[in-house]
Length: 276
Image (cartoon, rainbow, N blue to C red; front, top):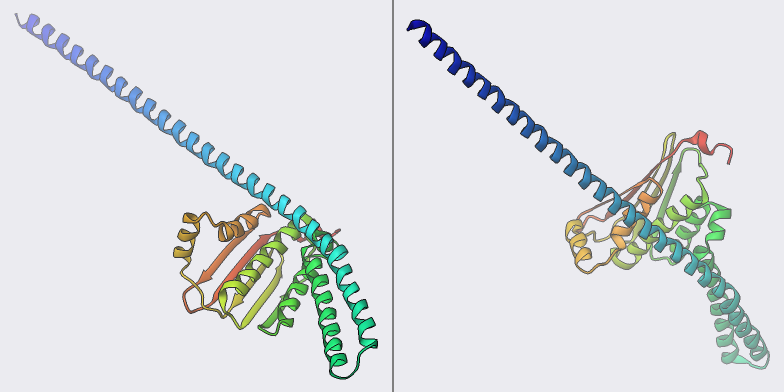
């Protein structure tokens, strides 16, 4: 009797243990399944994000290429046609001034001076739009011309400081960087109500650091970004996108009433460009 009871207990115990083992295996399999599914879902989401980012960058690059072609066309038209018209105006004024006297002669002389200034402004604008000039002269020269153009308006005090040994980057990178700086400066002119613009161009051993600071009215960055998204205004968003195209970073630091600082950082290896 005792042997029967012991055998029955052992059999029930073994059956229970086997059930426990089976349940444990099922639980482990379920856990591995869900972990595998979660991993696949995470990898899929990451792949989707990477594809979306790549697509956005491709779209932005295409936009910039179209913009460059358009700007080049405008620059050439300004140089060829508009400059020619201003030259004809000057010739006609020279003919008229020789036949005039007194106050009329003075007014025509002033008009000739204005036409001369207009011609110079057209040439400067044409140069700033022409990517061929940027490629030949380099980013620094083109950027300094842009700052000089702002200073000549006599609306701004421009403070410019350059540190380190200048490094020529690939021409494509320099054009994108120049257009990014142009956009920052245009925003200052259009929105900042500034009187001073301070620029630091710092060539460090492993990167280029550039900051453009104004003493204008500043703004609420979060509010402006949200408003830009609602209105599908891509100006501020495109600036960060431009920086990414050249493996750089773009950051805006601003508060209402405290001006704005735009910081651009582009990593590079000096030895990579030493021969260029």
